[in-house]
Image (cartoon, rainbow, N blue to C red; front, side):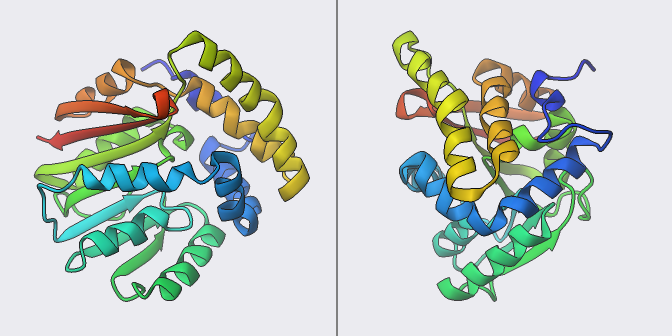
Length: 247
């Protein structure tokens, strides 16, 4: 299958795979990650996660997987929403996971969330393990998005739910122009100034510009075997929430 544009975008130049570069990049930005997230999104990412989880009111999963968990924001929110569930949180970056574990202990959910280092394209779980799988702002970092979606489908039980939160591009032209300026000029400047990480925060906006969205993302989920694939847009399209059901 032809590579999707975002799969070709990497944080660094060189011969490493995208997955290896993503692991290195997120190890690098881990100490600044939460601060930079709040700064770049003006804190609105918190409300996006809340809205997304509110859409899961009709389910009561016992086993939950959070893919590309980063510093654990979504996994910790899942623990609060589903206090009886066992949550597994997976990420490539060991340093991001270390930050997530500290946060989980601070929030009092360390016993409910198991943090594991691993690749979302080859997850170490049997088929049909989880009732719910989530991924927040990590799909564009996959080396192969189709393969990643197929893998999430594999580990979900039939009838299980997938929830994907991903940054996207506003559809209104006037908003799109301003957003493109923010992505191309402001984010790399803030990354260099506040985190000392220019390459990593140049990759971020480049990946947002190219990640599949809307109907293109729904088509990927459908190809992976999901049904009832739907999308809701938040904040004039700056964020998209996709839900789907495993077949």
